[in-house]
Image 1 (cartoon, each protein chain N blue to C red):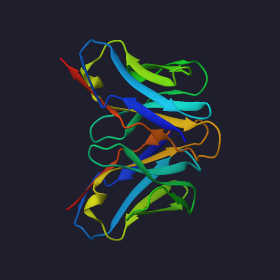
Image 2 (cartoon, rainbow over the protein chains, first blue to last red):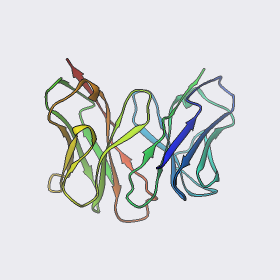
Image 3 (tube, rainbow over the protein chains, first blue to last red):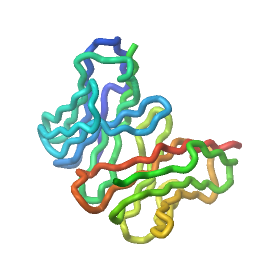
Image 4 (tube, chains in turn cyan, blue):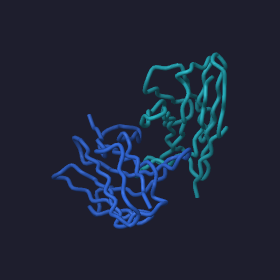
Length: 112
Length: 116
């Protein structure tokens, strides 16, 4: 069966520090991968998606970047965090056949 | 462009009462529709999905939803609420046609509170 992992689970970082969040998927190949953010009291915002290794599409201009160095690995990064980057970050995957997305457990990021 | 509207950001019911969470969509092509549930500090879990087969879809935890094309609705129901149903629920849409790379359009979410 397929599983999706995210780490770390929680992170507290000062403003201006770098960020690296990792997402890995097991049990499938060539998934579409997605990064979402949930800010407090707000819905899901799609940040990036990827349909293959090295292929990244950004949905909104922001302080973040994403990379996909391996088929089942998706990384969210920032060189310098802003207070507004705080939130709950979710990674998701889909096989692209029936389009339901499966979500990871999330990373709670607090920028202080 | 497609959109999803969830009517009511907060819904409160008593334990044992009917749960009804409303979702309306806008799409130029036949959509695939989904309901997800999110418990605090957890990821989203798929409850059920509509993919153009039966219009009444049964999901996990006793939930079901009915696709009504004439009303562009996909409301989520459960006959009898349990305390464990308290969570946030998201309705989502994928356009079956076109090149969307599997992206989903989500509603803003409905927080369900269940009172004893």
